[in-house]
Amino acid sequence: MGLQEFLKSKPLYYDKIDLSRMPRAYDEVKDRLKLGRVIHLVGTNGKGSTGRMLAKMLTSRGRVGHYTSPHILRFNERIWIDGSDALDELLEEAHKKLQKWLRPETSRSLSYFEYTTLLALVAFEGLEYVVLEAGLGGEYDATAVVPKALSVATPIGLDHQAFLGHTIESIAATKLRSVTNGLILAPQPYEESLRVAETLAAERGWPLYRVPDALRERTRHEAKKVATVAGWPPFLLQNLLTAATAYEVLNDEAAPVQKAVSFDLPGRFQKIAPNVILDVGHNPLGAQAVADALADQKRVVVYNALSDKDVETVLKILKPIVKRVEIIKIEGSRVMEPNDLEAILRKLQIPFCAFDEVRRSDDYLVFGSFWVAEAFLRRMKRA
Image (tube, rainbow, N blue to C red):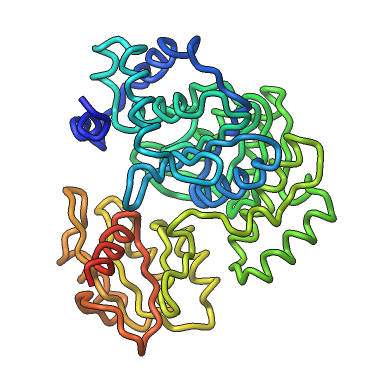
């Protein structure tokens, strides 16, 4: 069975996760894997762009793989090697290897994300560096089984509370208990995350590097100059400073921040047309970052959401930059009921209608999730 057919047989979501399944599967393949230095990314927002910036900079030192999720249009977006998404042929070859290495019952039992994590590790064999992005949480995430040279924590906020806990402390602890050999800690929106990091560092004896304190002064100035020329919003500059700190801790040399300017990851405050910005933020932390970046503008917001998201808080944060919301249809069992979304928009007194097409007379922000990004891009492609 080919890779895509095999993945279609696996559910994307589980109500309950078997936390022993991925460690058992990794034990079956670990002796065959030959991986370089692994950098593990955890956090609520900014993992993808921070990871890709770091991966781009690390290409100056050797061959690099970056594992990110989810994808928007093609599965290959999840597995990036030396500047390009992995080719179908490479992924099929990795799939065949994995099918031989895993016991059949193990292969069948793994979730979609667990299997694709192992698939990425096989595809990354022989590379000098692997930038590995956690999917959900940290301590029990599928990516946490791999020995790490360094961990990076991007901003931590409230998201996936059903799995991670309902307080910043519990969410931060779940993410940061995955750290084993040192942590790069990005500036945090909540003081609780810093306290958790400091406590764990003291208890477990690993070094804690705070951004931007641990960064060379010259690199800091160069990063700000690079971000200004590129026209980046403040949160992308912050992600660059975090990635540069990780590079310098790993290699004890100035980070080549210029290499990160062309980070090629779709949906991260991406200008896909002169009047359209696409951002896959979907939680209050992501909404605040985008609202701050567009504070002087009014935009038509193309939006929809999954039922487990804090939609009212997200829309309340975005309201100052909203001209109107245009609801785009997305498919899936977890999508919020249209009546519920419309009720929230009425409560917040935000004008809304159904999304039809992009008009040249308006500026747009496409926001909500990877699901929204995919639906929008496919609509634009057909148009």
